[in-house]
Image (cartoon, rainbow, N blue to C red; front, side):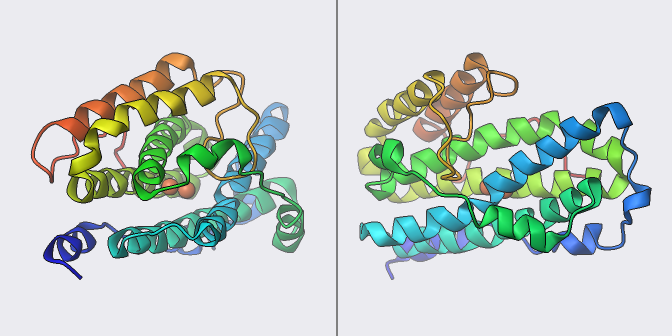
Length: 257
Ligand SMILES: [Fe+2]
Ligand SMILES: [Fe+2]
């Protein structure tokens, strides 16, 4: 591995916490859910759990593409897949508690999900495009989970802690992707704005989510307004083009503790 690859690999942040350490002792009777809101909260958990679960589709798809992926980027994907699986375990537990169904039932519903990567192929055909898509997607996710801090916290203090730890991971996924772009792809940096514009255009067309983990943003503008999506892309353009390599800038909405 080159010195640059080793440096990039060392700079990758990885999480070291388990969702069930946070949520494992919570009983269903401890959840504070207003009966009028129960259905909406269960729908939110199904949605979020599904997206986290879909990380299981994306990793094998990327590997099957046969594109060349650098060693640090492979490590990035290892850490990312581990974290998203942990996020799924947390949401599966919350959903099980809120909806009164078993985790096995949730797993079997999830196993019916069928990804369609067709519309995403322009973003998944080389490492630069893929990392740009990850940076954009994870940055957007950070904004969305932050909007739900109060909701999760109102259901149970442990759920509030879980969503902040999860969002710290999402912020690290963003930072990791951006760091790899800045360290390993400086020679193609000028291609990144056009890729970001294409990602935003995809989302603004409100293309249906294809259970691909990436670009789950067709929510009718509830969380993912055009203004928010464009702001995320604009920040990435700024951060990828300027400043020292290590500096990825503050994620102002993240305060995990
Ligand atoms: Fe996640
Ligand atoms: Fe993530």
